[in-house]
Amino acid sequence: MTDEADGRFAYDGLDRVLHEKARLGILTALVGHRDGLSFGDLVRLCTLTDGNLSRHLDVLAGDGLVKITKGFSGRRPLTTCRLTAAGRKRFREYLGELEQVLRDAAAEEAADAEPRPGLAGA
Image (cartoon, rainbow, N blue to C red):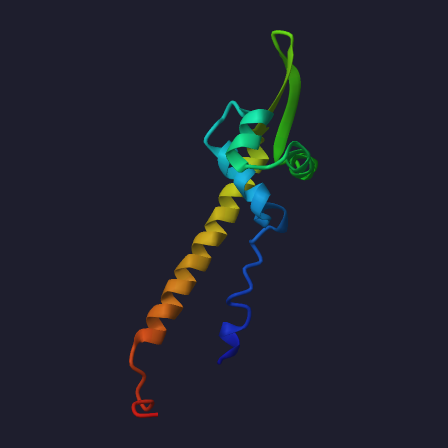
């Protein structure tokens, strides 16, 4: 391999905060809901416990990716979560990096399927 290939598959854009499975699910759920989703909706959509969701939302909010608003719907407490503008941008960048992983994997697989000169009969 040449030096040009060094780091080709490092994928530094795979953000560790976003890459965790539960947080990836939360962000994916929120990206299609500009007005946000209730805490209960996120629990249901992501199949997380209240405590687990709360912990992941704390990480995302601490990094400025989501905004958590506490209020009431009638007399019932209502917690709403939504992506911030910075969170939406960072999530798009992360998805772009994942798309690059897919392109690279497909190219590597296609290259592996091509017959290589000099290797026939090896």
